[in-house]
Image (cartoon, rainbow, N blue to C red; front, side, top):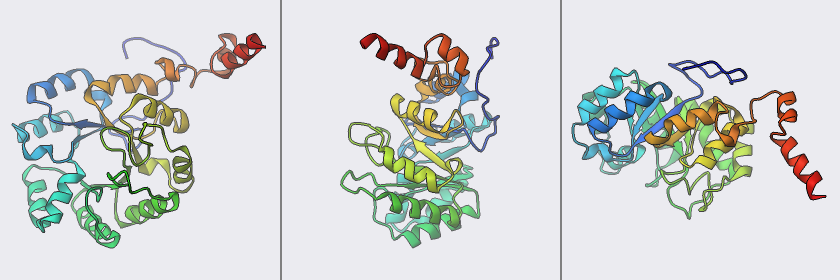
Amino acid sequence: MNYSLSHIPERTSQPRNNGLTMVMDKGLSLREAENFLSKASRFVDIIKLGWATSYITENLQEKINLYHEHQIPVYFGGTLFEAFVVRNQFEDYLRVLDKFGLEYAEVSDGSITLPHEEKCNYISRLATRGKVLSEVGSKDAEKIFAPYKWIDLMRSELQAGSWKVIGEARESGNIGLYRSSGEVRQGLVDEIINAISAENIIWEAPQRPQQVYFVKLIGPNVNLGNIAPEEAIALETTRLGLRSDTFASFLPEDIKQKYKLGKYFQDERLKQDN
């Protein structure tokens, strides 16, 4: 860091298994990727090339090489996996992963209906060649899963070989884990983390209030995904309690009381209102 501050929460060190920031690249040019990395590479742990953007991305191999040079793993979005599977081209998908030197792969069924046993078979097979991230939840707003279903799916996919399971939210953050307004389905999240270790879950959280919610709920080393490149630094300050939303989260109680932060601020407001 550029200078010293006390009471900053400890972040896991890279390469890390927990406290991950997954950034979604929705079609950055090579120059844009270079500029992004020049300012934020140390705050990024994984890059997802969103949905099937890799199919039409210019200079794809060069961009993947650039990310790898910064020790940042890259993977194709799960929609591309689905596009290959629905066309009966899974073997071609494997060859594409090998062609571009990708160790990581995402397995999802957000756009297609895939028997869960078959999905787990794909996870198991891909896990023999690298790390698998499997996404749980539908991109269809009409498909709302009960919490027990999320838990069952996540458990079985981890058992099948997934390195992390991803809670679906799309790049917009208004589906799956969230209501159409972007509000977190808090009951759903509470039930999931009571049953599945948070270390095994990447929560897609493209919107700032969603990121703040999970940092406050789980801590600075929560795994968050679908972060826009321009938000990577802002998210890191949120994790560290250096943004207004989490400013009081990691300070000692005596400081919070002295400066009327957090609940002490609320208590003071109540006194004034009365």
